[in-house]
Image 1 (cartoon, helix red, strand yellow):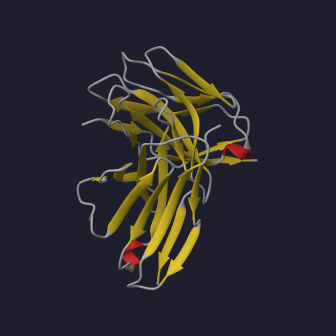
Image 2: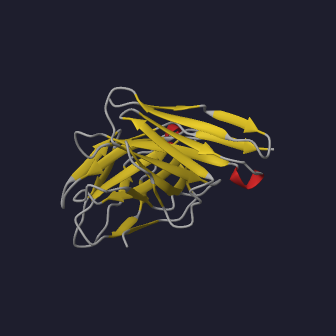
Image 3: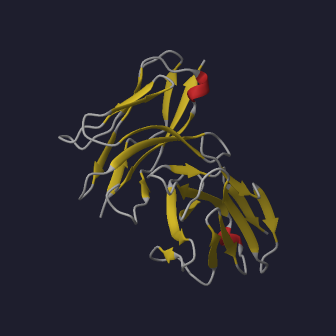
Amino acid sequence: GDSVTQMEGPVTLSEEAFLTINCTYTATGYPSLFWYVQYPGEGLQLLLKATKADDKGSNKGFEATYRKETTSFHLEKGSVQVSDSAVYFCALSDRGSSASKIIFGSGTRLSIRP
Amino acid sequence: GAVVSQHPSRVICKSGTSVKIECRSLDFQATTMFWYRQFPKQSLMLMATSNEGSKATYEQGVEKDKFLINHASLTLSTLTVTSAHPEDSSFYICSARDDLGYGYTFGSGTRLTVV
């Protein structure tokens, strides 16, 4: 079945460092891809998404490009801030199905040092 | 933007009692809602898909009689944890899918502690 594999954490960086969190997927169809962020004790917030190959999702300085050839959707940010400390989930949804649901990766905990 | 309200945010109950968690889409209709469970420092595991006006679809390994789901309207789904035990303690999160497209909005989660 469909699945998402993402970089294991925790990841600890200094403020203003460059961030990459790797994510690859396996899907039989043409999924939509997402990055969600979860702050401590809270639910999930959609960070960005891409619905087709070569689409780039971006939000709050974060970017991810839908790469069909490598089945990847890596999350990047050029200069991280302390407020970016959270858990990040890569996810996919089979948008072609009326019964579609979101499948999550294992999550990557990011900590940013001042 | 789309908002999903989940209530309560925290609940503590005694072992053997039942707890109901509500998930409401505030400004859109959602024929389909999802219930997830999250253990500490782990990912979200889909428990069931809730369909308005019909029975929920449960994932393999999830006890239907333990986790009762009711989706009586286009804006409300409820999850009832029956005869709760300490091992049911967890963070439960709901998600609603916008009927107009394939957008998903998540609730803020419910921290259940069974003592």
